[in-house]
Image (cartoon, rainbow, N blue to C red; front, side, top):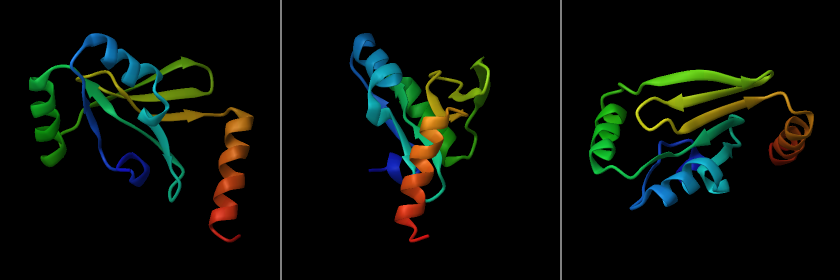
Length: 109
C-alpha cells in the first residue's frame, strides 16, 4: 500500500536469495503512483544496520541515489546503500500507452 502511495518502503529480508528476489524480480517492489505517474520502488536489504541507516536517511532527508542508464531510453534511479531501484523511466510505447489509458480513465478525462 505504501508503495502505491509513493511512500518509502524498506523490505528487510532474512536471506540473500530473498533479497535478490524482492529487489530484482518481485512485481510489488515496483509500482506506479497513479496520482503522479511516477514508478516507485522498495529498498531491499538483508542487513539490519542498513535498515537503521535507511530510516535515519529518510527521516533526516539525507537519502543518496545514483542514476544509471543500462540501455537507451531507459533510466533507473537506484538507492545508493542497497542498490535498489526506486524509480524507472522508460520510453517503451506499450508501457506509456497502458499508463496513460489508465490515468485518463481514472481521472475522468
